[in-house]
Image (cartoon, rainbow, N blue to C red):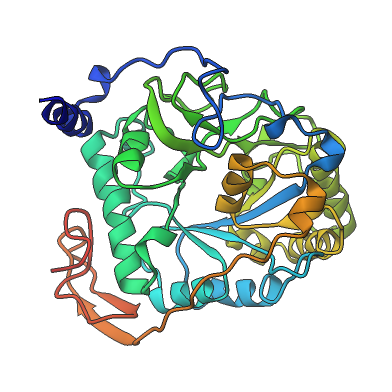
Length: 382
């Protein structure tokens, strides 16, 4: 009888509307313990002193991967190595439309993290703000299957979510993440918990993080991590979560000014509590402004030589928070490992699509061609 009841609770939890979920209580620090639970807090995991904390840097790129932006990625991030001789990481939050999955496979085989940015990336932004559990299931749980299938990536290697426009969906996206084995969300900006910066935490209990793009989650949703997007401050002190969203910027033609701007934001973390530093950007921005690109490369060159700074895939930050070992122990850890996959290449098209009757699509994939262009409700194009 107890087993039947437990199964029923799990089944109902996956189907309940957001308003029927259990409201999260204030965090109980004695009950909420690593590795599975952490309260939202700017306190350093494990109670370490800042000098003993590895400074993690998360470089991320959003949107589709194609034959144009792959050249930027090949030129600026391939073959980078941190001071511990481990490969430098980068996370790609990829949306589906017009993405070249053979190139996604290439990025994965270089050791970079492949994460989810939705199937449709549709407008208006209110679509995401009003999204239901079923909407988020179609956008992200199905995209996990789509990405794994067409890029030939192990499905359990796809761990992260970033919602378009950094628009929160209340409880819906986190419910889907919990039900479909997605580890973390990297959508939620903070403009108040910058110095000291807030560390990753779980949603077992109520979050204390500021809600910049409501609705933010209110329910208790165990096993799901929030990787907060700690905002930069522009030249006028205005917070900006994405680098290309900063308004009062240095001269876009001045590499030196941009390098100083990047370092100033980095040092807020590095000289403080060493909360993870996010360099969140779109490739189009550094292609449009070569001086910004050069400054970014100069910054990465600098941190790749620093003995206590590590450019990592985003999920590696969660891994460390779960087991917060001090810097000297971290330096002795073996490098991350993974098994590269093959890409039996297919060029598919023209493919029709129910969502866009005016265009035919071509797909570059690592699998057998679908019957129709994959989309919401039909992620494998059957």
